[in-house]
Amino acid sequence: MNRSLLHITLLLTLALSGCQSMELIPEPEGPEHPGDEFTQHYRHSHFAVTKNGHYSVELVFREGTLKEGLNDMDVIIHDREDRDVTGAEVSVIPHMPVNDHGVDMPPMVMERGGGTYSVSNMDIPMTGKLYLRVRVSTVMANDEAAFEFMIGPSGEMMDTMHTPRDRPMDMDIGRTTVTSARKLFNVSYYTPLPVPLNKRHSWDILITTPEREAVTDALITVAGGMPARGYALPTRPVVVYTGTPGDYRIDGLKFTTPGEWVVRLHIDTPFKKDTAEFILLVQ
Figure (tube, rainbow, N blue to C red):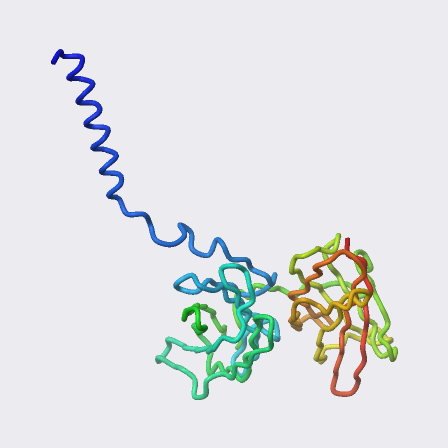
C-alpha cells in the first residue's frame, strides 16, 4: 500500500471512530430550557412551571398582593399544549422557614372551571419569607410548582409584581366609559388598542359613583359573549382590586372571533348592586 492510500485510510478510520464516539453521547432529556413552551396568560400573575414540566401554574391574588393573615387567590393551570387543566386535585401548601412554621388549617381549594381554581382561607401567620407549593394531580401526571415571597414588616408582600398607578379620574385618553343600568356607577375600561383577537389580555377598570367618588369595596364578576352568534365568553376572567381607589383589573379576557362582543360587569357592594355593559367591535 502506497503512502497516499495509507493516509486516506487513516483519515477515514478516524472520522468513523469520531462518529461512533458522538453517537455514544446521550441526548439531554426534556426541553433544553424547561418552561419555554408555556405561556403566561395573566399579565400580573406570578408564574411558574412545575418541577417535572407537566403544567404551568399562575397565581392571581384577589387583593393584588399577599398579606399577613387570611388571603384569597386564584390558581390557573395549563398543560404543555396550552390547554386548560380541569378536573385536577389541587392543593396549596404554605410554609415559612422561620421556626419551620406551617399553617393549622390547609387552604380551601374549589374548581371554578376553565383551568381556574379558587383558594380561600389561606392563613399567613407572620411576616418573613414564605414558600407556597402548589400540587397538581390529574390522571395524566402529578407535579408541583414552587413560589417564594417575602412578607415585609408592614404585613404585606414586598416586591409585588403589580404596582398601582396614580391615574387622574378625568383622564379620557384610551378610555371607554358607561353608566351602569341603574345609574349607580360610572365604569371605565382601559384596554390595549387594537383590542387583541384570540389572545388573553387584561383590562384596567375604574369605578366611581355619579359624584365621582371611587368605589373601593366592590365584588365584580364578568359575563358576556357574542350575542349575534350565541357565544359566551370563552374564558373565566379574574377580577383583582389593585389597591388604588376605584381601580380594578380584569385578567384573562379573550375574544376568539371578529365581530361585536359584549362584556358585562356585575358590581356588588355592601349597599348597592348594579350592572355595567360594554359593547365593542373586535376586528
